[in-house]
Length: 391
Image (cartoon, rainbow, N blue to C red):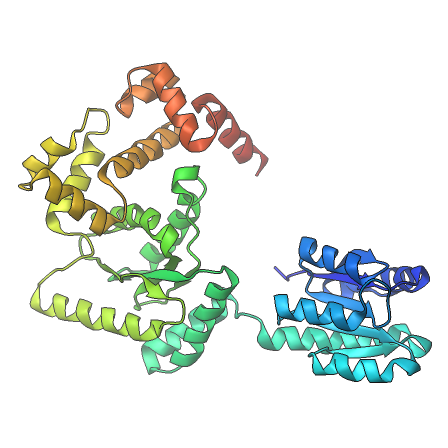
């Protein structure tokens, strides 16, 4: 889907603002005018509120001129585009504007649709040169990197653009090895379904790389990483041949392709020597399987720790270190996921679903469920079914 770029227009002459809004074919350039202002101060307020991609501004305006406005906008977002409106007498100001990185300036006395279109074409080409590659383009680069060893620097740059856009200071890199094409597509589908089932499991993987034969890689903000782990546990449980790894928290400007290469080499050695060091150790994996198979029963951490041969304190520390979340929170999230699935996929009574996740008290179950999702179980069921019927 083509991105629609937002535009605001600032000029103290109303006729200029109205003329630009209604005489330019903004749709042709995949742009939309989302606001206009008669002075610089109001334009800055609009900018902070709407964060437009392009600001068309008069140079000489009351209460903050266009040069001051452009300087503030460029300081807040160097990627924002500025197009100045000016008169011949504003030439000295226009030079200052160009030094700020403006894309050009339009003389009001010679402004026509053809001239405006020429600048909008120039700005569109600038966006096209600096825009983040599409998912398909990125995965094509990844395939080339995997088979020919090229595009490493370009892929690192692309990943960095995604991280910058989401203001992630630290990220976790997950790699799944031995996942066939069909399984990769299934994982993509699961990622879409899993993110948005409820608030507790709301994950947004910011970047993924996949190509036939290559590792399936997910790079996520460290704040979302703990929510991805259970999903990848399910994936590896379903296919015992899959090896998966994850890094510690990485700075946002890491050499991600080097990290992927390192994980690939480790996975290959483990495959050759038949030695596994998955991201989750055998004792914790055993605990996870037990939790999933006994969600309808009381589960006490001390008893579970004893059953897998660990002390309670060691179990708690190891569980949090490997899964990124405490035992109790993990248990709640698994129960919440199962309850959510049963509410959508069955017509069972609410109290029965509560029992299936270890909560026989119907009021307690409803209160607990609402605490995580913001909805009662009945509201959640109605909302999901209404959404599904409208698709």
